[in-house]
Length: 403
Image (cartoon, rainbow, N blue to C red; front, side):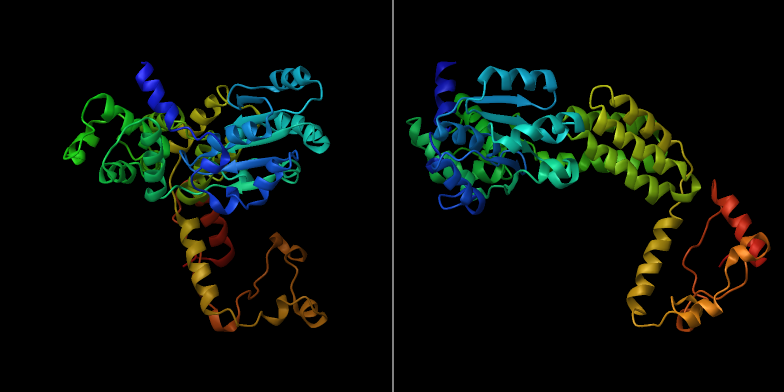
């Protein structure tokens, strides 16, 4: 146990100068490093893929500032806990690190605003999600956005070389490079694989790492798994299998996927694969997103499950997707075609335009397409679900089904 702990600690950099990667935003000459050197309070969101150094960088910032660090996760920390932390320091400087900050709801985000405005602390939020999609504009306007990139294999290898040397282990560079390549840019995966192989006595020169790495419990491309589960989730709903859809959704949440990501995928599916066969589907999906954002887990898991079942059990229709693609293709080919005179916002156009509400039934025969693209079919309804109503209405106007 002590040997394992010693090796793991050897991989932890002792100061920001030992930090590997992210030179553009966190390197020695980066503005954020100057804030740290000058002990200037700041607020920042660090976002990037797993294992790229977000938490390590926050810890080193706290150490270089010589200020105590409070680490909380947005999954469990509420406003009462945040209030207790602030009261504990009574105005004295400290560093607040919030992991999974994208899971903060609007109330929790608003609680931070006065403290960020008054610079009562150094605030660092960590997330794998784009802050522009999940954080309020009021919060974003008060913080720096530091985007961390996935580490390269060379950078992960550098971390392994430094850590193994500090631990007093002399290993062939090719072995460490193989482990680095295996990690897919995730330093945690690389370190865990290194320790696992070392403790099993298999981390030796000449070992068949290709076979050994397959037996390492962390031998998994986590990014690929994320996309595989998301793909299975979408395809299960598209295939009208609610059981499989709910199963894959649960797998995603248990694997640490952001529930807002899950909700966004359902909003997209509602428009792409259900569309006008059930116009209420997109309303349900958007409501699920709002519930996750405003209520949070675990309660909002009910809303996600209900929506996944509803979307799976809805009629499917991709006529909206087809219409969008045909419209964009035609628009790109006819971008210089002039708008019909009767549709222009001019005196001549207004004089020629027939206002539909001035005619019986709120409709009048009138040409809306330019002459050059007349009689082009964009929206091709299938008549599935609610589209039966749409087809019936259009046929009543034109005397035939749109072609």
